[in-house]
Image 1 (cartoon, helix red, strand yellow):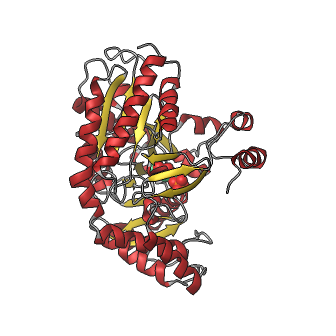
Image 2: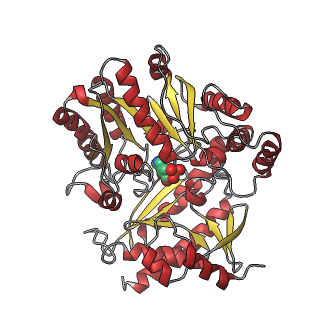
Image 3: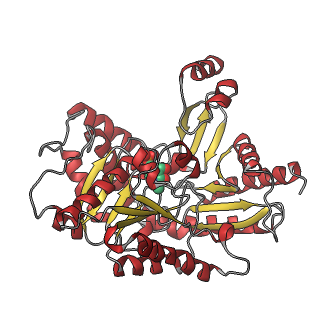
Length: 452
Ligand code: PLP
């Protein structure tokens, strides 16, 4: 049995948590998770919560996939480690690379493995720069990203990202530039409809390319749907316009599919949902259902044709690139996704029910907007629906709502003033009913607390 009090004391004494206020945590209380089953997680006091976030948007198949666990165990017995440097390889890495290209959009025949999404985005920068160097355009080094984007936590990935708090703590790379995010609810002009807003924001890319000089701009990186930034569903006009600009201006498009990949938006890739034609695709998280660390980049044939045409080493790699146990987990995950038609079933049966149910909350007194796509959603909290005034200073209202939901048995997250959700793709309708019951109770309690 677990002695929760001692474990928490030990945790506060020795363990620095990611994305945590060290002062508050050292002086406060936390939650320690000790087991999980199906789509429920349990803390060390035995409290169960429906995981409305699929872990950190990664356990799309929930927590009880024995086939993935067994595959990792078997691989550990066979070959627990060997690296892929200097032309070496291992069977699961080879097979997973082939499997990933079989589910990738048309035109992607190669994969570069990393351990995480952050490292995969670092790898993207290296690949883009090498590509243009080999093409004899070494001046093409600049990368354009978006404010409030999240591309990871290494220095390079945090620079690519547009999270204000991260930029305040880390010096951004000087070759990364940012344009605005397509957040209609937050940033539209008074009276501006979603389609006009989408076009206006997309055209900021064109203006930024002109400002920086087309000959110097190498790539544009974006999540099909900004996840950590608040599940920002782009207007329908947004992606077609960005794609036009990338095509016309000789700019590579990097789709960061770390969250959107493997079914989150209703198709295998967010790029497919939004009609994007990326040159590089970042993946991680759900590729192993979150059970093992693994990330990587799907590299388009357009780029490998250049990268493979001339000699010279690509001086980049990680000790655990293509780790056999992680790749074994990836193979088992892809097998489940394919054999059980998880992506297609979630799009057909789960997503419409989830989105319809959430839409009923739009009349709640503190709900300003409900937005979503596939099994991905956000709810903006307001004090006044008309003026979109926030419930409280900063993000206090959404933090209160999140904590209330957590205590009621629902794991949801908060970003800014929005509640965000990404339930496992294997949820049943009854799980969504449970989610709705807890979420509604949390919204009611929040409205009461803030006297709305
Ligand atoms: N890119 C996106 C879109 C993400 O959401 C994340 C993580 O949440 C990352 C990259 C970073 O991935 P990792 O935490 O595996 O480094």
